[in-house]
Image (cartoon, rainbow, N blue to C red; front, side, top):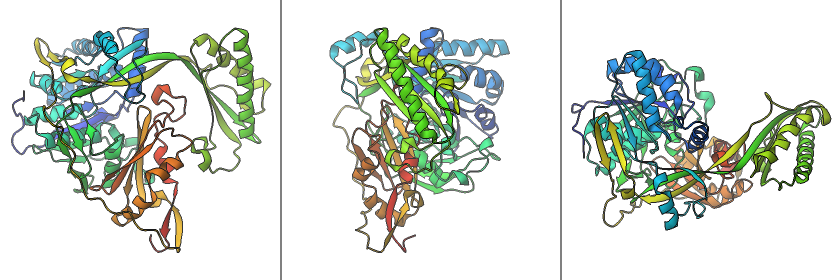
Length: 599
């Protein structure tokens, strides 16, 4: 059902992206509230890693499991102004406990003498169906494994339709559980403009807008390749989307703030954490971003167009969490002559010592160990370039089915401060915590089996969202620039960063690296030099699976999807970069051959 259009024809809808993750800057909300005629603030708190953190919190206190910062740092200080100005808040802060988040908001509102209408979107919790799903033999999307024996949570990624329904019920604040990141923006736009849920291109455009602002300042200069060109990090502006009824939109930021709105910076965010750009699957629409174009539209403003949509798939993705033993991560500062060798010897000694102690108490060996030397490019593997440093941080990660077995390493690590190498500081702020390992498990479920519900006071609307019936619509073919021929002998090598911008991110245990040509003339050469095979070889020390390459001709870009690339990903990984944030930086250092007169 479509809500009636609330925006006058031709009016612009202004949506501010106020949080990219749980823990984002408190600067965002007051800064965005300075934007004239702002309509919505949207908040995305639920990275896949965050679901693991929320599950840990709920295991300690069943009343938790939601993003408490939304209540304390957003609602409490800013609710009065938002209500007075008619600015609505939409957030997935509900996490694993959306009703608990709603109740906390209402309690704060009562303290302030305010009476907001707070809607909650539920139905994503699939724990009641878990045993039936197990009996049906569901399989993990990446590993193909059956459901683990002890699942702690299972939540479907809902779409935007319940959010739009909650707004139609008159909500001032909408709190959801698990939903796709971009749904908070699409839900607002679809409600305000009264779009039909089969208007695929408009749904795709609004989903792209949500994708751009879902990570906060990553769209306004955060993580930008040319970081030295981004002014005033201390006051970096958060993104604002200005959208029209036809789905076209511009990206800008509050006046007088730092950061950068540019074609390249927004383009990097378009590529962030996507796979096949022709098939970006969301609950409400399958998006095709290959023909997306980004153009300057004035000072601190870019226009984004060209997203196309197709009917959605019949299933929701489900994110489940389960406990797989325990882990501890230690950090020690090692300084002095031959610091790297000294750090390695320290690690070897601590592991040998604790293995003996564990064996003496009849514990099995560690299930996983990882030793890294932070400060000497350990993550670069064979591509590392450094002179012998005189200080490094020794990082040891260990995993075991039993917490008591890890207590030996937790305690013995401190002894290195007096019994091992000179110049050793054996801890940072006390003993490291032993933590539960909460892993993610993803599978698909038919949408008709997920009882989504929007509830605002006594108003309730239930959803059983079914996909379109019929033959799936394939993405159309697009013309792609041909790869350049073999360069002449008169060539030189330059780092990729001279020819391209790039950004990387994670999806579970996969990583992606989006690459954009700095100039159109560079793209044929980049397509020749950056093959999937060469990228896989460059990351051979980190990637266990295959590498795929996809083209985005509208942006002069390519996207690389690196499978099994993160050591498990998120909290399931012992690596120091479990989210693949540095992968683009590693690739940008890769040498590429260009004619000597090319640049």
